[in-house]
Length: 313
Image (cartoon, rainbow, N blue to C red; front, top):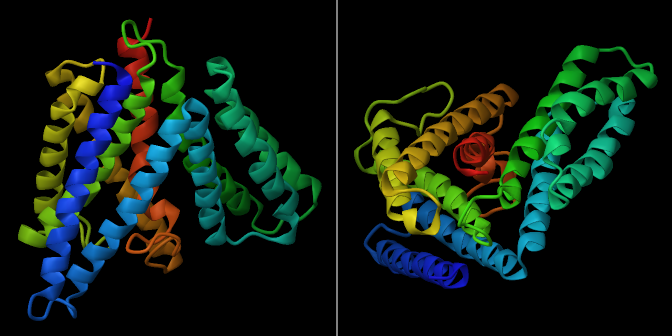
């Protein structure tokens, strides 16, 4: 089966799943007390947002590799903006911030476009790590210097460097998998996002024991185990769009879902520290861009390097 046919089957299956979820959501809302049930309203808002997000991803896939790279570059821009909105920057940071948005971010994705692995793998953690404090120090503002520098560095690492490893999957040369790398992107995003949704559903159904009550009251051990196990099963069932065997697909899905869970936990800690519930209001039912991508940014680099060292030439 060609990559195009596999993509058609994959997105067809996603559309069918969302259609079923939409019907169930409407029935729940029409049930007695359903309209005033916050959980049902939240579920329906998430389903509507998923239709929009899947449409954007499908459109990017139709365009091809360039479309996927541009899509994630725009997602990085929105996520970096949300992250820096919660940091306490000063006038002395403006030159460095402009460089992060309009030089570093497009340059990182351009390096991925030209497939320069030797540079895009170290550009931000080495060169930008050194450049950004230089730009801040040139303005002469020393107030809370280390804190300001560290917050911006961490924001760029998470929202640009880590997220850029999703389209970087397109640069990998995998024997007997030529032209199919877009499906690896679909596998990663679908499994991690499915894990998020299923952890939420399992938590609502049987969640009793909280994992970290002070960080994320909605995360429970029952939701975590049920969500990770279900998403791992989905990953195994999607082996046919990857270069993995069924067992390998399950192992990769298990790794990215666990990393995704910890990503959500870490980003929740930052939100609690700043006294906010969500990173923003960009996506109805989901919060901001970072609320939807917090698990992906932690899973993407690990998945990328696992594939690179295990399956490439």
